[in-house]
Length: 189
Ligand code: ADP
Image 1: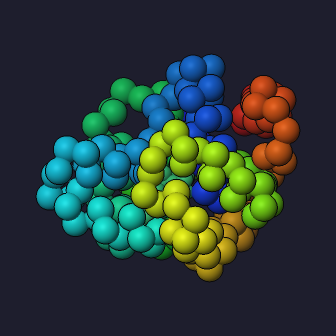
Image 2: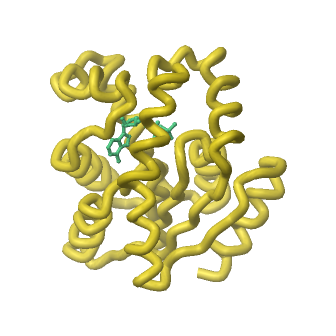
């Protein structure tokens, strides 16, 4: 199995690159952000529980996020592998994912972090909001999300570095050349 974590701050291009990677490697894409947005749109119990948290730019509690993710993995028993996008966002989530995969005789193959500076992230998301209309893309909420990233999510990097699973790619440049760099790393796995 090829299990990849595509890592990076909000606006780093994880979603864009994931789409291209699933086509090339026939993996199942699991984006926790997309899953939460679908629950909110469908007004499920989970959606109602998380919609304010997400609109405010805060992280959803680990227990809720981990349960949703495990359920999603279980829905795909025949998958050749997964791309995790937007997960794990905390060390507790990374540990839970390792334990879950291990109990299914699997593991994370590699983690690729897309590196993009804060000014570029803000510019990209301001542009995206014109199209997405996402409440959490508004400037004040975005600041909160970037804060959450630098306070909690960035700690996931040393976790995977300690397992020698981390690679870094410059996330600034054209989409296809970034994709080329990602595939070079993945083809070595
Ligand atoms: P982006 O990649 O633009 O940061 P996402 O679409 O991945 O945003 O996520 C949107 C929001 O959903 C996050 O700001 C957070 O509130 C919530 N969320 C997504 N994934 C997680 C997660 N793994 N843990 C906690 N909250 C999450």
